[in-house]
Length: 306
Image (cartoon, rainbow, N blue to C red):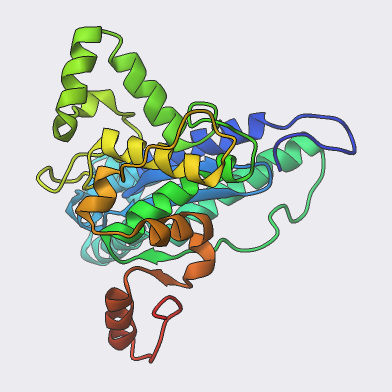
């Protein structure tokens, strides 16, 4: 998909840029926020937040504007946009159309369908071929609690280090952690400002984070990932040094603040960020949350409950 083709000798890393750009475009249209991503040579990972409440609060015109950025419209909707008065049957049908579009704009399946179809078309066009591009349908896991969100994000951000194609987070190309660090460093070029922010980890301003990624903040800041940005970077860097003993720098024996706050054992954490996908099936979370989810879905057991 990306990287070097051993048969032709061509490099297709530019396709990774296609994916990152398309992911960000779709997240500006859908009510789906990107928390983490990693684009590898033959697959990619995404951690997203579906903001259903946001989509339900959109006006009809907002839904139309967003839908028209990606798809063809409908003649009734075009008449509405021209200011025409619709009769009662037409208005009922118009409302049904908008309701359908609104629902699709917070649907992960529609998000992934648009992403994968776009990349497939562009790649086939470049390769001058037709036919199936992706091996199969995407796989997804619902993250049931904060620990699951955190470990899944770290698992995704550490993909290049686990694969031994990067030594540092800054060198982990086409990952959200690389983008977050680069953006933060660019924002804090002023040494005084940087030192002040480093001493106040709980109050990292949104401006210090990429606008197209869901920001870190804390439990006291609405619509953010409930952890401080620098605490997360510290956690992922510490985790990477345990995964790859060749990684530059010593391993700090002090456990990261986030693990202490969430009362997560070191061995449990390191196992999770290396084998996250194998630990769980459709749902990921603590044993208690998995049992609750199983009970609500009227099943006896989910993988991960032990």
